[in-house]
Structure formats: structure tokens, C-alpha cells
Image (cartoon, rainbow, N blue to C red):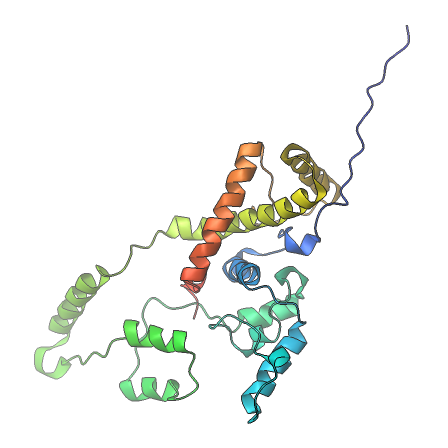
Length: 266
């Protein structure tokens, strides 16, 4: 009897978009929040010019006194990004070198649980002009002037008053869901990857089932260890479609509250 060999269907991966737009496995845990914010901002505000041209145009506009031509209107960058980040945005996060990533990350310091400064020192740190409106609004709405009267009432009375104030004021803020905050960027990056893959899938006119298989095949061909779960493997057409919907929903949340992912960074 002749042995019948099963013919394997050829796998064509040429429909997949550029890896830097959806394969986020080289992102580290420490940069995940910022990288996620960066990529969703790129999705919300696509820019065609190069990062260098992008920054050059905005810098030129700040110094000119004449009317700016239409083709030199300011390009978008997130309001809470500093110069180091603006010079590189909107370049895909995955194309940034490790040194560039560190340079951007260094401008977003972990926000401490409590910051205490003398009023004079605080005012010196906030310039009267040129402050980003979003940053200024954050200071105006969420900073407090406290005058502890240690000399009259003593330490214990002041501590008791501070505890009561903290308890009362915290009711105006949403409770911190630490576990959700830790996991959310990982899922959000997977959702974004699916949204971008699905756009390419539609252009290539292939089924979700084939797309899911190709994404798995790409993983086998380009194995890479990752410290976080951001690779978009979904085991059903329904979960793929849900991830795409979740990406759209999360994208609109970023538009409404641009610094949500950066809430622990300042």
C-alpha cells in the first residue's frame, strides 16, 4: 500500500504589517505604561512627517513673528511630553533604541505617594508663563497648601488633623485598583496589535481564522522571550473581534483622559 502523505498548506505571512506596529514583545515591564500611552497617541494622532521634521517645525513656529504657512502648521504631540519625548514622537516606540527609551523614560519620574514642599519652593518650580495647560491644571486642582501649627497644638494633634483631612479628601478620588492598573497596559497593547493586524487582514481579504494562524506561525518563526504578555494570540474569531472592539473603546478613553496611563508618572 502506498503511504499517503498529508499536504501542508503553505503559510504566507507577507500580509502582516511592519512588526514594529504590532509585535511589542521587546517592551519591558518598566516602560509598558509609557509605551502603551505612546502607541495609542500615535494611533489617535497619526503624523506623516518624520520626528526630526516634526520637532523642527514646532520649534520654528515658536520663534517666528510672521504668519505660518499652512504646510508648516504645528504637528501634534502629547501635551504632557517633554522635549526629549517630543523630539522622538511619533516614531514607533519599537524602533527607539534602548538609549532613546531610557532618555524618554527619564522625563517621567515615578510620582511619590506624597510630596511636601514649602510654598516658596513650590512657587519657584512653577513658571508663570509657558507651563503646559494640562500640567498647570493638575497642580491647580490637586495640590494643597497646608500650614501645620506644631508650636501651638503639638505633633499628635497635627497628625490627627492630617489623617482626618486625608480620609475626607480621598472620597473625592476613585479608589486605586492596583492589580488592574498593573495588567491593563499589557492587555491594551494586545488589543492595539489586533486592531492594526485586523486592518491589514481586511486589506489582504483573508479570514480571521487564517490571520490567527499566521500570527501564531510568525511567533514560531520569530521566537523572542518577553517579560510581559503582550503578544496577540487569540484562540477564537470571537476573542479576536472582542480585542479589536476593546482597542477602539480604550482608544476613546485615551482621547478623553490623555494622562490616564501616566497617572503614576510625573
